[in-house]
Image (cartoon, rainbow, N blue to C red; front, side, top):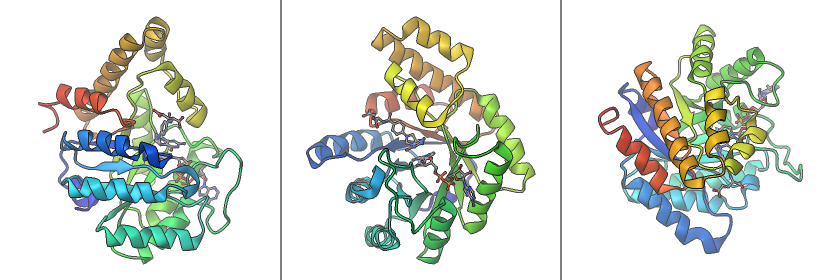
Amino acid sequence: MKIRDILAKNEPTLSFEVFPPKTEDKYESVEQAASEIAKLNPAFMSVTYGAGGGTSQYTVDIAASLKAKGVTPLAHLTCVSSTREKVHSVLDQLKAQGIENVLALRGDIPKDGKVEHDYRYASELIAEIKASGDFCIGAACYPEGHVESVNKTEDIQHLKEKVEAGCDFVTTQMFFDNNILYNYLYRVREKGITVPVIAGIMPVTNVAQIKRICSMSGTYLPARFKAIVDRFGDNPAAMKQAGIAYATEQIIDLIANHVNGIHVYSMNKPDVAAQIKNSLSEIIR
Ligand SMILES: NC(=O)C1=CN([C@@H]2O[C@H](COP(=O)(O)OP(=O)(O)OC[C@H]3O[C@@H](n4cnc5c(N)ncnc54)[C@H](O)[C@@H]3O)[C@@H](O)[C@H]2O)C=CC1
Ligand SMILES: Nc1nc(=O)c2c([nH]1)NC[C@@H]1CN(c3ccc(C(=O)N[C@@H](CCC(=O)O)C(=O)O)cc3)CN21
């Protein structure tokens, strides 16, 4: 099923993200985690794309196995480290597996700085996917502005280019203060961007993760969140419980404010996904 058709129902939806293994020996355990999460019957599940594209086969394989389990897959595809030939080979594989949804990303610049030069921005990839078949295309957006962009106004202009290139919906970078999303939505709509915006929520379950997220994206941490980390950061079980509760509260507030699409960065953790799902059993059906 195409995600745009799922979102068009305008009802609250819960979806989860998994990341593929980096090496073959981890494939079974990732597939197992993904199928546990699939049992929660999410609206769809996204599968990230390994930096550099060396593990693109795993993205396609995990997405195909989710589809076989009856869950709508969303396969990520990044272009900064890819040649045009590689992109088309992945698109052909997705088509062959009947995978209809692609999250078109530029992708993180690899640590060694090695990039290909066929694509510079996600908008270029979106236009090409659009011309290559009947895909439903998603893209990323940044409520706090993307780390590399000059300011939020320019970042929203670039989002508009992605929508004009043909993307059907966007998912947000994680955020820990819902007011940031509400302000962003106001600005995005004011610029005439009308596609559904799915809120990306990261249940933070350990301190190492917070550091990584902040260095990845410079995400603002509200005082309320910092207090939790200060108090529970050195108690892994308590930190996990508090992180799940924080994410769940964020989701309830979002739905109360009519943000219907909720995407959880569940990081291959079925127990985290299940706790969130169960706490929302009367809120998201
Ligand atoms: N895997 C995921 O779900 C997510 C991944 N990301 C990561 O965030 C990073 C950015 O990816 P995308 O958002 O797809 O990239 P993008 O191509 O939309 O934007 C990348 C940067 O380039 C700027 N930009 C875009 N078009 C431009 C133009 N024509 N001229 C000048 N600057 C321009 C943007 O403002 C931004 O700072 C990647 O590292 C991506 O993997 C972010 C959110 C979600
Ligand atoms: N810049 C950026 N790149 C992404 O790939 C990305 C985002 N932002 N934001 C939205 C989601 C969240 N993603 C994430 C978030 C955290 C990790 C992370 O902490 N990775 C660890 C491994 C964690 C584990 O094994 O449990 C790492 O060391 O790579 C990875 C992807 C993928 N997406």
